[in-house]
Image (tube, rainbow, N blue to C red; front, side, top):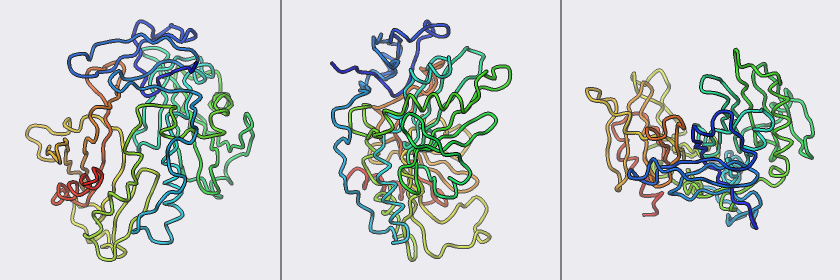
Length: 385
């Protein structure tokens, strides 16, 4: 019998926080399926890891999926607009986009290493290739936070400043800091899975050094990291569907804006369209960003919160039936497009009714003048229209 564990967002009832135990595998998780049942709590009885999830999406994790590779194609394709000098990077990013970043964590192992309680597991703010695990010690205590990035740049120059070690059969590199520690597990010569442990500070400074804790945690993660879990493999559900798609295929819809255009990836879920001959920075008017279009797959909170009465810097529009907000900043324009409102994650366990994260397409452009038209083309491409 498989052990089913939910692994998207820890949403823990105050009745089991703090001072409660997860050793029995029993916690309470909450998630708004809709406005009518936002306060519904579900009791989950599990073994091994602690329970985290949203009810509507039936989010689950199987620690031992039957199909480690999922249904992803072994051969990754590179968008035609990516020039030869960037194709190897794009191929590596396509490969690493299929790594299940949240599946790289084990909340129960983090609890054992730190002595604190698991609280939140959520995709990182940088994109869907990242995942944060936050722990909880008390309402007014700082605590541990672990961030994983799948497909982080970790080339020869990075390795020179790190110490090679072996943990649980994994060849890794350790970089020590005063209040944090970084461990990298190479995927190839240039990229790695990188995990960073940030320790509590001030009066909550722990007895254990950050690297002692992180070494213990990564040693426990070693069986999972030896065969990096893939999206669609069954380790976490529901799948974040945007990660099935190449962000460069979306960014390619903006290439006709530029002279001598090309595409370049900057991480597994981000791609930029720009010109080989961009305007010099000093020639850009104030408030105008770089002459490029960048597309990123993210989880973010409701972009409508950016729209305020009497402030024209943000406005809400509808694109192909989807909510979108154009936000004018000091260095360009950012458009947030809610791609899948049905898969949501509680953003703050202490205020679960107020904030949820949804799967979004984030588009940055030089100005908001044509941002809506650019967003329309990107949505049409992602939707397969």
